[in-house]
Amino acid sequence: METRKIMDIKAERSLLIKELEQVEDISLLKTLKAVPHYGLKNEGRIGIEQYNYELDEAEAEMGRGESITHEELKKQMKAW
Image 1 (cartoon, one colour):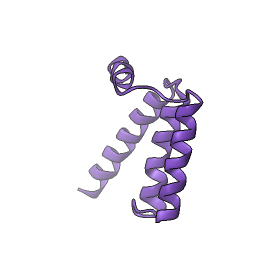
Image 2 (cartoon, one colour; image 1 turned 90 degrees about the horizontal axis):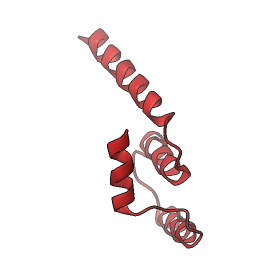
Image 3 (spheres, one colour; image 1 turned 30 degrees about the vertical axis):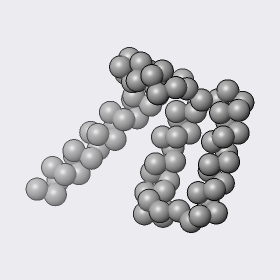
Image 4 (cartoon, one colour; image 1 turned 135 degrees about the horizontal axis):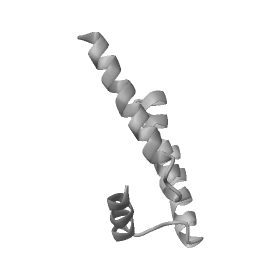
């Protein structure tokens, strides 16, 4: 049973890597990169200082035009 679980994880990881190799949007890649970072290091929780920093950084990225709309993201996801 444990061997099957390990094989499933490896297969999912491999598929995810192949899909990520096709992504050309840096904002999307940065967002996706943050998910395992917080899951592994902080169990998904951050402090208020980090939260405020990330909000400020996100607003700055939006101000520089480094973001996409929800609709644009949905279109990109359909192309995956």
